[in-house]
Image (tube, rainbow, N blue to C red; front, side, top):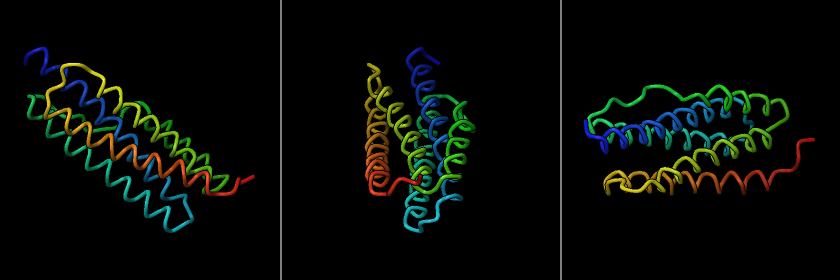
Length: 150
């Protein structure tokens, strides 16, 4: 496997691990959220992360690699943050998710900043970034709409 292919595989696998982290945090948040509409929106977000994992996995295979099959190092921390927030209420759970999604969005932004990414890969990363940005914006708005828990 050439150097460029290895770089693409490594970069995309980092995004896959990040999406696994985020999907796990969404599932943890869904178990804690009381508001049905917010729970549904988090379910949609978990589905988006799973869609990203599948699309990015295809890229890794096309470039001769093996997609990672698990979350990265942040999964436990992100789920713990969400679960602790659940002790305080929906607003804090969504605030924890907002923080998690901000990190995922930043990972995609960093990936976009890499020079020399092939167009097919850049197109998928750009699409995923747009979806991440949309859900992050929803979380920002939703947290601002809810009254403080304390």
